[in-house]
Image (cartoon, rainbow, N blue to C red; front, top):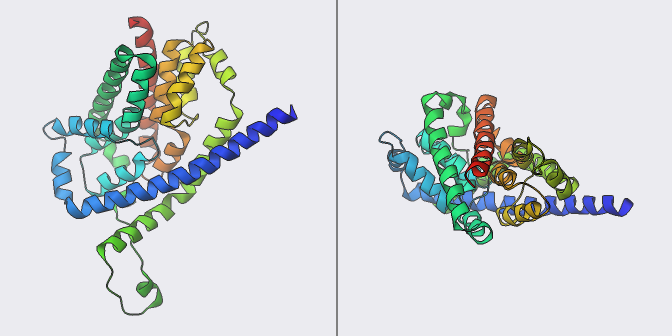
Length: 305
């Protein structure tokens, strides 16, 4: 018993260290790249492309999500950039839903593990629901649940301003870095808290338990798998192999589909990070869409296949 507990603690600590390092690097890198893009692509251009006024913005946002190799957490800095560029709210939400679900790594592993037919089913569901959800949330006026400070570029404080001396010329690259670092410091408490919770669940929730409660004998297997997937933070490279292993242990394939969408589409870490951008009503709507997509795809998969 002691050895099992020790192994769980080591798994938890290992996952925490790995995620803390990975997400810190990803957040800083993506935030910086977004800042560079904003130097060369004026906000008005992004606003016109992702305005959603003619309907194309929603499709473009979905396709942008499909080609960006982001997980649920590393989508956040890109989302911040879209907010500050005043992109359309609906297309922005399409990107938030689609990016982690349709990233190239997941699609590639899906095709190798489950075959093209199931991959096309997954892609179609994820893209369709993302576009419909983004459009619906915009029409329902959910933009009012974005926190006002999310639109504000963080103030980049250099040495001169801190010391009261004359401002030395600062290159635009350093200005972008100062802004990126200021942004990172704001979300750091959310990031660490989310990683800690996700790592504990990862370390102390055995796959045998997940497979047992989401087996084909359980009529509630699909919603249970969808709910479990959200706190069970899993990297894109791991979610597909883990799902295949759970299916081999007796988990129904509809529940496997729900678990993949729940775990890839959202995570506790992402939800905590989103609190720095959205009010609670918007976070509840986000979770409702991901859970609805996961449960709906699971039942539809069992019905079709």
